Image (cartoon, helix red, strand yellow):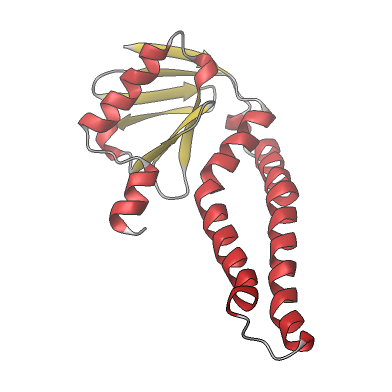
Length: 173
């Protein structure tokens, strides 16, 4: 059994949201860049007017996405952090071979490993998804050593919980 105690910081909630939205943002970036490159690469424009007519909306989308990603996402995460009191409450998480148990002063949850639908990871976090939009974040700073992170990943794999990237590639979700 692994037990971790902690309290989320606003910057962690914001960073976890970035990880959560990273894949969809990359897809949008790819589509927008391809749209912007199309008139240039194919040279399918008759004069400058049509070229700019095709290119300007793409540039506007690129700027809008960059602003949205940079400011709106961080602001929304800050707003959620202020509203959702359990995000700022100290918590204890116990992880056994059978389940993930999280508790704080506002409640607790017991989740069998197989009930998670997917997971994601970067250098700072593990995100354990209960649905496509709801996840538990586990800051890696709270683990005593890398073996504890490996314990969590092994429980997920043993229970056939796919990582988010392989789920996207395998099932087109």
